[in-house]
Image (cartoon, rainbow, N blue to C red; front, side, top):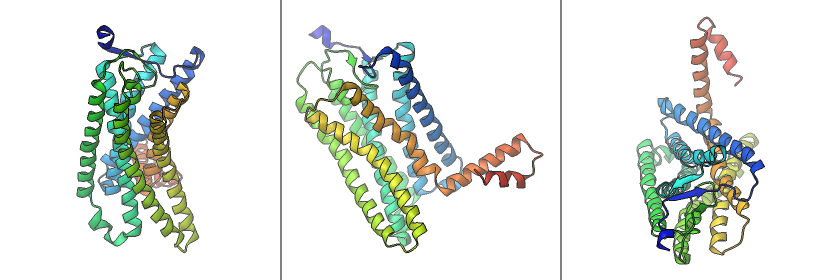
Length: 328
């Protein structure tokens, strides 16, 4: 038992039940997911950091969300793609614990950033005259810094709790190391530890979700009272798209935690698919839903395209460049 518990290297299985003929499509899909997240979040980070007129509270929050999502995908996706492409699924025990820390640290951070975005929209729509005094850059940066610190403590706590367990199995039946994935390899009974982490997870997920749903409920009530149907439809569409991403992030996570706590038997591949779905799809959708659809970002993107076209073709009149960019 002592020899088996001294495991220094683990193996990521990805989707453990699929045949080899599906390895290439799965790996290509995961690679494209990473490229999409890398490009979209990278564009958001570049646009916001390189333009001072975007130094506004809402864009500061979006910038933090994009950094978090990009870090998460960079820490998790390249390793599982390497497993399918180069048959290199091995990961050190320390590296696995780092993925556990990152998953719960950055996942919790996303929860609180989505909460902050909902609060920002609530104040902007329901208390527009008081918005500058309630929401400003300095206060937003301080809150974001607090969330980085607070959620890192959550990640460290879960990683330290997992590190105290002896492991008897090396195969992690997932695309990256999670708390449930590591605890399933433990030699001893970890029921009490799972219950403790379940309570932490519910506090991290349910509290922000309750406040987010409350704020959007108030926003929808305000939208209903608007007299102009055009503004009403536009606001409904915005709320619906944002709520869809929020539900995609929170509801599957809560379902998986509750299912593990109740010991509901799920197909391993279905479980991994749900994990990938609620983890990586929001990371691709967030830049589009929260940032690239806004007028300021589109205007900034158009101006960058104009500059690029003028640099490549200095003989083209600026008027023609501006006219052509209006169709983007």
